[in-house]
Length: 371
Image 1 (cartoon, rainbow, N blue to C red):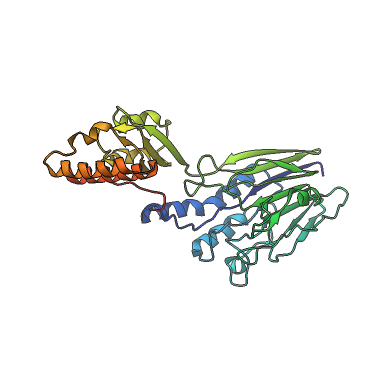
Image 2 (cartoon, rainbow, N blue to C red):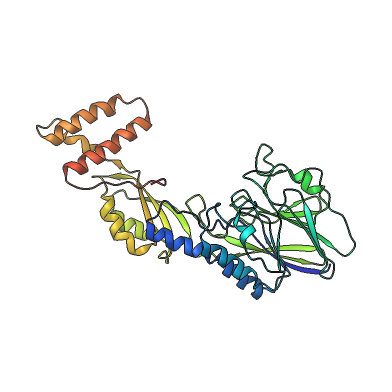
């Protein structure tokens, strides 16, 4: 085999619930994930790939909307090259799974067993190995495996699993097993952070990561892998097909207007993206997060604010005055001075923030990731 082009991706997690978003925005995000097969097919055609490897967790779970299954089969069948699917722990294969009900065209090869099997393409110069998760976990499928070596044929594999995590229930794989596998390329799924092109022995392998972020644990640029083999040399190009980015930034709002500080910290174009902004520094009064969130709404698809500012020392100046505010501050100041840790002091400061906001008839809201 002299030349080969492979499109490799995994972990689309279509039909993710997006529970941290409003119902309307969650529906938009599910629609955007449902568009990934169309983007993958278009990229495969544009780049004239010889095959596509989809290494599991294309779906987020067993409950799948009908239109999701239809989109998946509709666009994968349009790819003028073999497409391999190795179901993972979220979309494992069973007689009742969506894969068993899908109308798969002749170009789509679905691994259905949790033992390694292969398909040969002698006219194209490659053989593709793979296996499926048939439950929510899988044993070490590569243990003792060695690919048959045939002259003029590249040995490739499409599978879901983790590398060098021996206690993992998700098909644990060691680098030693990869090196001894006899594979030329091992296309993995499961880890949502792209690994880049790795090597063990004579085998190249990669985790492409997820092509579309779904939360703040999947921040930044998300891509699919385009691999090229040419005369014994492997290269990898990362291509972005994501609709939106998740990003988190920290902004110091000391001695300045919080809105202005955030505006100065932002890149030029954020209107399609989802941001978490952590506010730091010392402030004269609690930040009005509700008003700030409303002011920032036009800058983002979604914004979450987290207030980690500290009140300046003079916030306690009215403690002890003969007012409701003074009595409240005096009581909280005693608790603050007696606190045994910085963590406890931070909790008391936050309580003061909420209390002062309530006294001023203002709403103080902190949005956390799990809300």
